[in-house]
Image 1 (cartoon, rainbow, N blue to C red):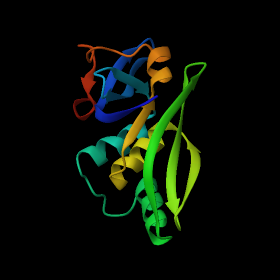
Image 2 (tube, one colour; image 1 turned 90 degrees about the vertical axis):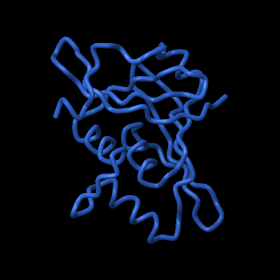
Image 3 (tube, rainbow, N blue to C red; image 1 turned 120 degrees about the vertical axis):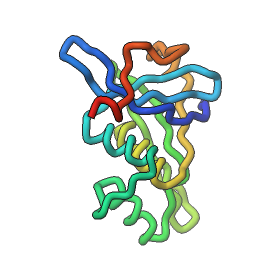
Image 4 (cartoon, helix red, strand yellow; image 1 turned 60 degrees about the horizontal axis):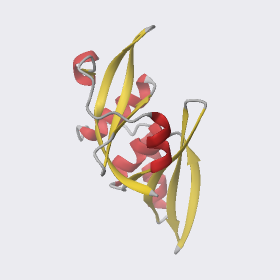
Length: 147
């Protein structure tokens, strides 16, 4: 079963190596899924959430522009698996009436979905296995305050 999800925000979370970016996703059942990501991906997601348009297209902006120019569309993103603490996702494109699936990292998928206004979904088994949160931990710092 897949659940509809929304991006709650991008944060900096304390780890044994210092602070690390984490995107927090709110699922329709109320569970929160934190996914640790890299700094460039955090910036890409954060800027999309804040509707910040760079003067020149960044990688995710470019991908969305290419998809548009090819008369395709991003239909949805599904975070569908977790293996050895690594999350997996697929981007579903519609091209000439047919659906095409593309394997992608969740962080890239989210950045593209936000720029395309495409819905984001999470397989319930991922939430069950990843140990989803009930609330955002108090030690998480808003990414904007971190950078």
